[in-house]
Length: 490
Ligand code: ADP
Ligand code: GLC
Image (cartoon, rainbow, N blue to C red; front, side, top):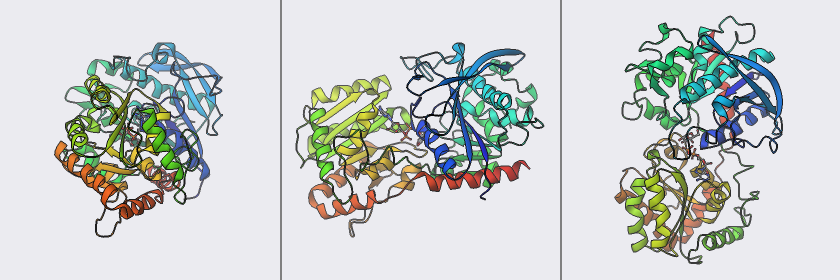
């Protein structure tokens, strides 16, 4: 197990350069953890217009880089930074990546050429390995955007001097996004029409990037054990269940870790005051400042419930919308909400502070600093997700002593232990039914624990803060998956 591996990761996001969600956090942190285990890792991603090249110390690395798209060779350039330890390479292409958004314009309309953009990224990433002589043992592809990589390796590079040893691992961060596009896109993908069949890239007459990736990858994983089981069923597999089941033991769940150098109240430089399980005085300061910043009644005796989320269907915020006002009208509680996405939800949550002044605060937009403030200053953190492959915010919440209130699905089920009212054991509050009713009663349970059973609340905070989801364990699980992929390829 201990032999050192060379690993090339391909991803559309990586923190701190470009982020829309947890994928970026994972691709930012996992390579560092693998490196600490003695592996050599590089990351390859697009050079989006929004990336601050100066701040992150990007330098030109290689140009021109020729990339075959169908029968045409297209040209790009590669940049690199080593500022954060693990080298991160950036594919620069004015045509594909010189835009403000990662996947969509400011109106949240997907760019129409997304399949072409990410096919290009994937081909360019493999070409970059060849041109610089980086011979990976493992090519690790993340989500549909990189899911062509396993197929390219097998179809084009099986005997290649540089790529010919590489086994592939595909990580599915969210099976709700598969990269499904009209068959007319197939030509430039360059994978021969013999691969456009229903047990590979074809699905209902369209191209499905993720499906082909699942079929070709030597190992496939998702980001929690429960989500791995759920996606094996028709209900949650979004059409992929048969193919995932076909993988047998080569489809597994590996829980994400979190980066405790970023998300830990003992060292967090973004929050008003630091605190530890032994000394929680700083948490009271964080709560007060949070209430102040969001124009809430400043009162330590009112529990604050936090939300930080992308506003997309997956997150169940429309269900929460059916409960929030009843909660505010009938319980002593406040809400602080941060997020953006769906315009109707933005309008709804953005309008609540005016209707419930002093009790609901919201900020529609993206702010890493506010995300840290909410984790630190809230008493509870709610995630009513309809499905959740892993979820990172609830794991951050645990470390901040901010008890999660979650729907028991995917990674939420795996990381939150249900409160036991008889003993005070547990780290949060779980419900099953995706309904306003269930949310209302579970929030009521949490709020009554806050008021009526303060020793239990304190005990739960201690138990939550003692949880350890650092990357080392997850990195070891990936290490095992890599070795298995190598055996499978052999
Ligand atoms: P997902 O990737 O599905 O959005 P995760 O819980 O895995 O869910 O990760 C979400 C990440 O994105 C967290 O780091 C969270 O703090 C961050 N995030 C989401 N929305 C916002 C926002 N509006 N402002 C700042 N950070 C956000
Ligand atoms: C996806 C999932 C989220 C997961 C993240 C990182 O965005 O929605 O649950 O935590 O990927 O793996």
